[in-house]
Length: 283
Image (cartoon, rainbow, N blue to C red):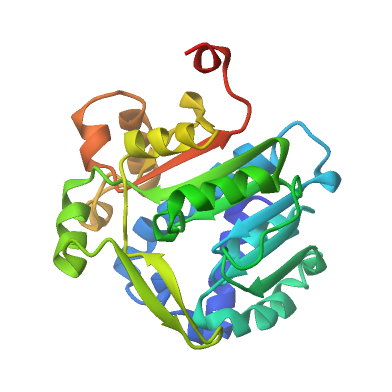
């Protein structure tokens, strides 16, 4: 199933499962429709490019979506015949089963399973997964080095991490995050379902350079060709311009290194591999 078709069915689902509309705000402001749609699809296309379209046997793939939330990416992978396990700490975990019933009309939702669990409580068996997806999740994992070590052990020898993150260099995001939480980058929170305190990164976003340092210290290498910056134009632009043209212009801008790419894009995607390139191994 193509991302565009998935989004079409997803938008219809929001009319059925209205409780998700507060999180996925596509039906809230129609003037934001194309702005949000472009962002959603670019992230899903990234997953398609690196996982769904990878030249491997899809039937043998096993993906772990750490921080799966409502399970949207997991459902997309299931619609494409890929087995996925999602873990989350979100309060809306119980709604996932209803979503599976809806999506069972279009594909095999049994390929998607999920559980409510804390990363540091239940370590997967070594070498379990081909891919680990962390979408809007890495900046919440603390201690981050320990989390990356768990990921490293959980992946197969040629396994990879696909990360979708806010751009920690973005000026406006940094100002907003500081306004919201000051310097409280790591906090302890009480989890009602687990009945325990858990450590969490408090919107502890980072730049790509900082992620590269953390990944290399913990046995991963971010593939330079995988880096993609997304969401450059604010919603106002979508009122007066063709959304497809804006998207293509955004793609062209992100290909060029410079201040606009590093400091004005909202999000950054990247793939981290356990296979260390020769030039790093010889350092």
